[in-house]
Image (tube, rainbow, N blue to C red; front, side):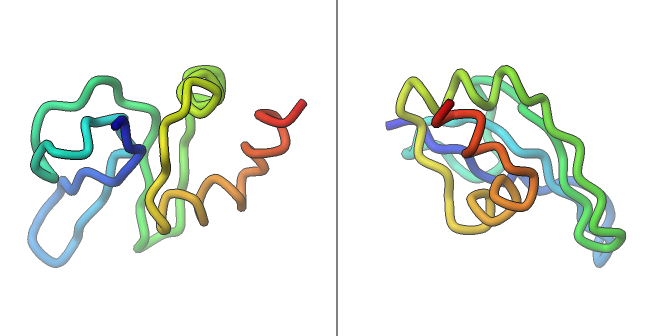
Length: 82
């Protein structure tokens, strides 16, 4: 199953995350199928590649709870339903 989840990168105590599409059995920081954006919790900055995200969601990729919350704030699910 393909999951949309966060991949950690950055310095110790200053983490940032990439939003990636990965096989659910792969490790957290393993090689992703596709990078779809990033999220910085320190500054609450988010950059999303909307078209690939919508494509993955329409194909049935399941977001984790945290990624779902980020996508809801960006109104991505409204574009999937349209």
